Length: 587
Ligand SMILES: [Fe+2]
Image (tube, rainbow, N blue to C red):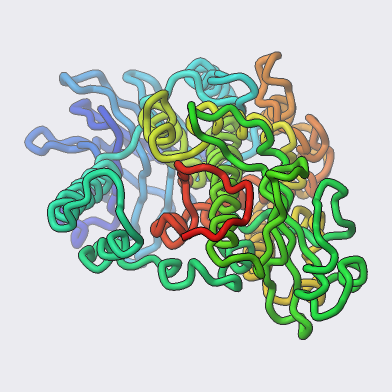
């Protein structure tokens, strides 16, 4: 805050300049306030010659006296703002203006979140939030939307990919503080990895698990991943399906797939004398079938399995345990079914190859495809169709923060030929794109972005069927909390079906969300109303599903990755050896 004269002025105007490239200005800025009755205040200059006001990320405060504001302060409806083109850096990104009553401490917020052009009069309503049909400055609103449409264009970066932004708009770049955090983290980790490699003597390959484990004792930044203690344990392997970073695949088995060549005698022994059919009928058998990974194009010499695994609830229905793993879809002599009763290293290796496949799906679909790329297309569609003054834009915008910048950076630096994905994953870049393409083809907003629907489809929503399933319990509860908030906001602005019908921005957003990518749309399937909203319920589901995917969906896929991938044998992104084809005694 740059001024202390608030003690003698009845009001203070706080001006926040955005933290983005080129946001600051040397221009002279002026405002006027307009009351609900149409009274207009005198002009107030928000620039001082001897001060460097309106710099990037800065908040500047200006006293406002009774000479400028003669009417009742609590009655302010609008704020009019303009600037000249003085100075070298005259571009200005205005984030927010807040007017403070110094006596009562009451605050009046006028969020702008816009680039302010020179010699143009802008009008901001209190809270700057209205449906387009009630905006009394429609020209300003339409002009802004037209320029956003030129800035946010669609592109499809690889065959079958979700719609993304053609060119990253400057506004989407990381802020200075965010970039600084990334640089600091990267420097710390690089420093640590150099120290580690000097101390351990390991250059490229580890000779033993002991060598690998030593690393975690010598590092402090990231700590020891939980999985290092548990990774060989069968109970842990099942728990990974319930609370790991990919907890969205386990389904109740209603039948055993004919291509799973399971041995009834071995299974019966594991099930305490119960046949597999009886256990299925008793709802004690669960399945993950990763057939989506079949015949994946991988880098030379590498192969991702397309496994089927069965799990079972123990007799007390307390613990989930693995029953068997078949690593490829077509049964054959060199594609055996592995059991926990097999030689220990044969079974352990089967679990590792299973997890390697699970990790390929996790990074390609659960994480990148569904929470990053699908949401990028929706963010682009939102910028193109909803004005920053639209209440739904305001609701969505925080969830898209830096999403486009992260995706653009990821595609340039990580998922590029010869980049991180090619170096550290079995699937490689092309394999990842192929899985994204297959996953996205089946993705529906009203299913995959609504946890209760998606989990019910897998038959595991009912707690009596699967008692311990933390992802389900948390995801459903968090989704409901988001829904409650969204509902209150949506019902506040749309208190009649006419308001939904007459909102041109909302309807064009709905239409473009479902319009095919070939025809210049976003190509999202499963949007309620299929391109035209007719009631508030459809808006609530759509909004909640998007916010839920960007928040809880991404959190579930992202935030416990270190505990899964951090100790590679537990959840290997890459395996360089041969997939086991028999159960010889491994050393
Ligand atoms: Fe992420």
